[in-house]
Length: 346
Image 1 (cartoon, one colour):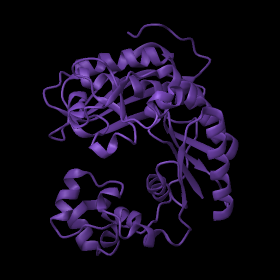
Image 2 (image 1 turned 180 degrees about the vertical axis):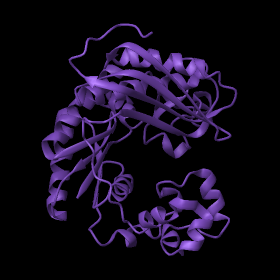
Image 3 (image 1 turned 90 degrees about the vertical axis):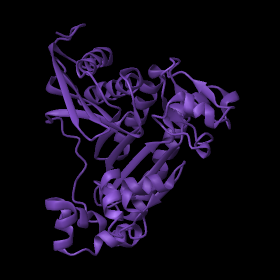
Image 4 (image 1 turned 135 degrees about the vertical axis):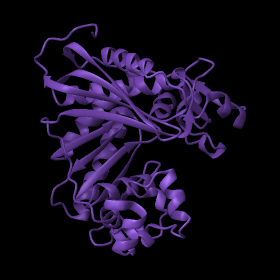
């Protein structure tokens, strides 16, 4: 069994935890600049259609009573460290996806045992950091992730082995891993709207629609997912990406996401006792063109400030000319944490 845990509206949750006057109010975490974008929206703000990566001015226009809170990355790192310590206590392997999200390997646990582990994790997180976490449990990663999304906020949901296809069949195809907005539009034009319809497609139709990865996509639609939780330190690179609901124009709007990803990667490096000598950014433009830039450090680092500075340097080198739909930061050329650190990149 695999457990997927995700802290609820993480940045907003931290703000509401530390300031009782913010609880129950629609709020977003965002910078103060004219071009600021929403990093996280509280659950009270979401009924107004406010989403992450939305321009702040647009969010305010949708909710005049919206409260804007500046980010506090030191608090986020502290909460993340506590979260991952708890996850490691209850799982044989933990694969961090971001500061607030991870897959956990529960081995040959029964559904009842996995649910018990999930309840203990929820209680421990609540006690340690006073935040809520949503948890999904299944035999594969994708279904566990979908289950945790269905459990939000502050829920716990398990999908028993053998019931994955039934659980998925009526869900919209956009929730299937690998189906982006453009692919969804093309597939819906063929009359396919539910995951269960993908599960029933023939090989010929799969190839026509998706090419070589069609059979793999059909397996996922049937709940067949053999990918395990990978916490191996023998990795070549670690990355973090964010796909935006609405394209972001200009470097200024991307910088808060780059900083957040740099913090996430630094934390994951420290968890694995690794340091990186290469920092890269991946940018997918509105026309789906992908741009990549990278830079090398004189010495390996796990310092989030250095990773952030290097990523910003790469981002500015990209000379963006179109709005951006995805931004990602990657660290590579990994070395054991005993390597000497520096303060500047080359």
